[in-house]
Amino acid sequence: MSDSCFVVRLNRYLDLTPTEKKAVASLEREPRDYPSGSMLWQEGDDLSELLIVHQGWALSESRLPTGKRQILRFHFSGDMIGASGIAFRDAPSSIVAATDMVVCRFPRRALGETFIEHPRLAALFFSISQMESIDLYDRLRALGRSEGKARLANLFLSIAARMRAVSGQHNPVIRIPLTQSDLGDAVGLTQVHVNRLIRQMTEEKLITRNRSTVTLVDEPKLIELARFVDRFSALDSSWFPSPRG
Image 1 (cartoon, one colour):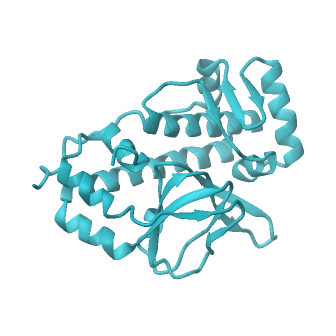
Image 2 (cartoon, rainbow, N blue to C red; image 1 turned 90 degrees about the horizontal axis):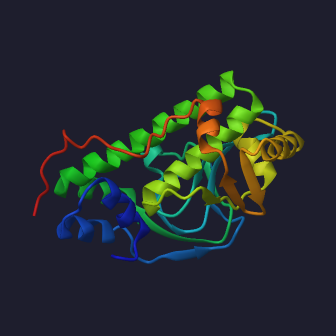
Image 3 (cartoon, rainbow, N blue to C red; image 1 turned 120 degrees about the horizontal axis):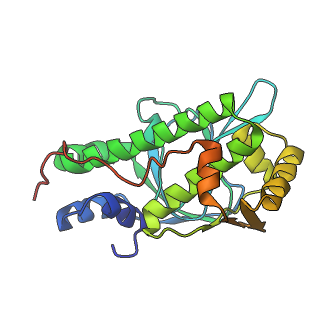
């Protein structure tokens, strides 16, 4: 499992036992390839399976009554997709491949079996899901109260924090293989507005962008601008049950 980005991500927060790693491996069988643009599932589909992303990016999106798209979340290597909707039989949002992807599908009943056999893993999965929920709340607050530049700063910082939780490295350069339309639909701005803001942020030496790469040039100023709180750098596991096996 040394090549599993999901295990790597979990290990950043908890030193998994061999038995726990084996349990995680059981969720990552039979990886499948999906080309960019593939619909992994649609809003309202039967949510009988969950996904673990090995490679590539996906979008969690919903269509508004006006026909416009709202991107709720980006998913990349090390993410489990579908856990936030586990309480429902039907998928609360659509999942679309933003790039070519390698994904493992597993029945959600397997997650229930893992929870029974490995309660510490259950606590870890739940905690990570809550971290992601609070990060989403932060972004929603930014959408409601912040100007466009602060919204973009919040999005870039959130993506960087999540990537660092997997890599363990504090790299100011982050790969974001998304269009300006994707970015705009995530922060409630038009593509033209996003383009103008990125130029402005570049001129102010806050970021640079080269195709799919964004460099956080002045991260302290970005954090101040967005009032950003890193929800992924640490996790309180003091309440977790002891591992089994």
